[in-house]
Image (cartoon, rainbow, N blue to C red; front, side):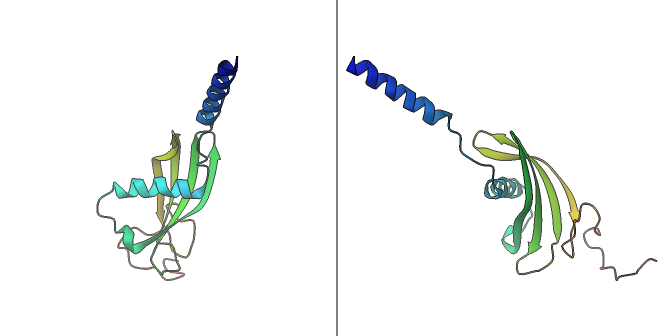
Length: 126
């Protein structure tokens, strides 16, 4: 009787612990996924950039995040990107991204100048 009770208790504890998934619904876990994705892209000098997850929303096994990139020590965003992620086990994985040039801390979702374009002064082109 005692052995069967102990065995049942051990099995119950194992099942409870195995059903508890890691809580990854946070900005840090999303940033980790974005950085992993960026590490796979050659030619990026991530050591010279600050990366900040400025917003994120979670829905079941999907997440959408807004990420700002700026040169270390700079006040203005150089680039603002949106990322779509999916949960795979206990980590987020980037599935797609979109965005554009930042500047002035704006939304930058495609509204900035292309890389290498000279800065435009206010009122130019009117």
